[in-house]
Length: 397
Image 1 (cartoon, rainbow, N blue to C red):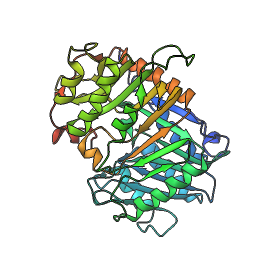
Image 2 (cartoon, rainbow, N blue to C red; image 1 turned 135 degrees about the vertical axis):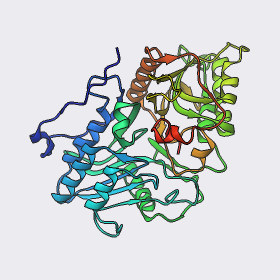
Image 3 (tube, rainbow, N blue to C red; image 1 turned 90 degrees about the vertical axis):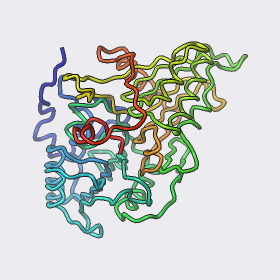
Image 4 (cartoon, rainbow, N blue to C red; image 1 turned 90 degrees about the horizontal axis):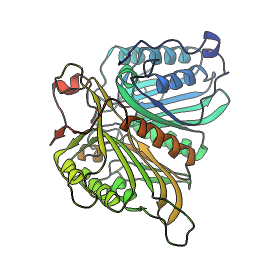
């Protein structure tokens, strides 16, 4: 039976107000079916806010901001001397946004501020849709970066399946800080497609008008190790993608189809996939239909699920870019669509990510085999609009 009990307090007042908590590195996932109301990721952000000492800086860039506990924690942090900086999309209009906006400055030259972008932030394209949470210090950790699919909303916990990866890599953190400053400035500084790479982490900043980094990544996957390599078994690929549409998504679907026909151990979970996408994945040629499940719960039968999978990730364990023993994680904010291609998005690659890949494979398999995974994918030739968006169902923008 589906249980959506309200989240309970997972930390004591003493924990919240001291530096005894340090955010754990690695992956954290949330499910609306969990007993604590799916707040694992939100709780990590919440505790990191309380663990940020006076004089440190919290920078949050996020498409939507609407969680009361996070708002209260940020206001308390600013009052005790933490520099709190928040950037959201222009569409953010709710009680919690107005609370944080009124508590902080509207001037980005101040140490603490809360502002909204007009359309996209650092480009003249569609919309700002990134989710990056930065802490200069949280507990004993410095240079903390959190990224993934999670918005700072109650719905991120009690309605969505989400992921978040936490790192303490100074090079990555410094790059995200400079990117955050460009978001906060809210003026076009790029045509898109910038890439940061420090060997372990690669970040592609959308928009990507001339490229398709997701399809390009999948093109480097091979399903079997080279002969004589001493490696056995097929490459494992696990995909979790909330929205998958149009020509941008179709190029990715063709790569996925290739991997399945070539023998990869492949599973996909999604929320919505367009007709062209389904046509490619469900053809009976080659190995037959690609294993794909829709992870949603539509309690009232109105075709707008109240609970839905919201991740945008790929985990690869096997042969990638010439390495038969690769462990590659790809995660971030973009859905696989033309709208995402034209938006401010963040797509992160983590190399040599053995434990991360293991965790993402396990969580994706859990969704794929769960009681709310459906073999029949809802066909859509375009994203939901109107009432569906106002109901908070599908966050494509």
